[in-house]
Length: 393
Image 1 (tube, helix red, strand yellow):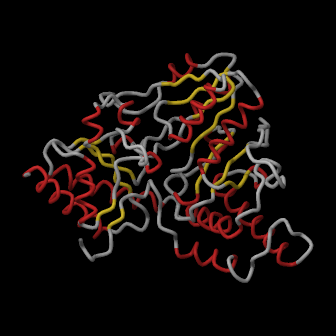
Image 2: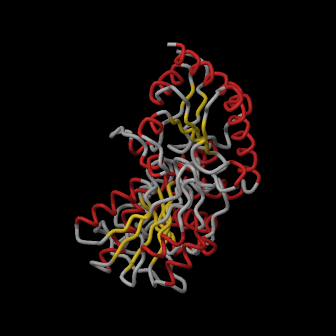
Image 3: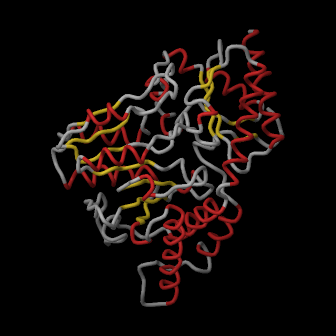
């Protein structure tokens, strides 16, 4: 195995912790260790104040008020709280989801379906369409009824990078009197994010997708104009406005706040720089590998995350290629890390109309603001070399 530093191209799964985020977090593990709910002494008060600052930082990054931000353990918990919390308020009403949503959404929807909630799953455009993976607004409108309570649509897909037309989706959803939940886990730092602009009533986030720590996330709950009410999943001390009981993870929350602040400050320069590297990687692969195909929207369409490539390599099993690349110090994946415990072809690629064999030949490559031009050149060389070895065998 190579002794060089790894070339990390799995940034949709998780990102490296920004050193500035670590610096912000460290004091809250040691000198400043108070419980944010202990308001009778200085250590507790300073912890409470640090959480308030982090809440303001997250709120500023997504264009909301601090009181609309609830801290959770990550986007998965945020999704569960949004969907199940809304369902508890309106039992028996319809839930609408898109077929290419993250497993956290799809599995929560399936659970609610078993509890008696009708669930409608909306298909997306096929690989042969102009914009593969795009939701059809007419199909979405047809899927909703007067009994629709909640619609969940991902802003930026974690496998093919597609950006859905959320403003148009929100118009249709609100016309039916329903709520819109948006999975924004991949968005912060990769594109401007404004809850008012996309029309979200609920939105889920995760710090480790934008160079923050693992184990902390957020849920946006609209409290202006269209007031949203949820029932909690966790009970106890009544923290986070009663929606998420449990002692607050102050170091992680401080880290999330700083990560969101840095991500917002990097706009718009960072996505443009990362997109240039992404485009260079694709060009190198397309020039060297006959028959290589891009999964998802065309790069020139402007409807793809700036850091995303999803590539089908002809004649090679994706898992075998990934193992070969790992041996050479290149880290990538076949799709959602949350599905790796149950390996099967990507449900996102199957929804685009790829066969199981085509989906298994596909690899996801995710860049970040820490990716360098030299790493892109080296990664392309190593991918091409690995493909030639495997196809020769």
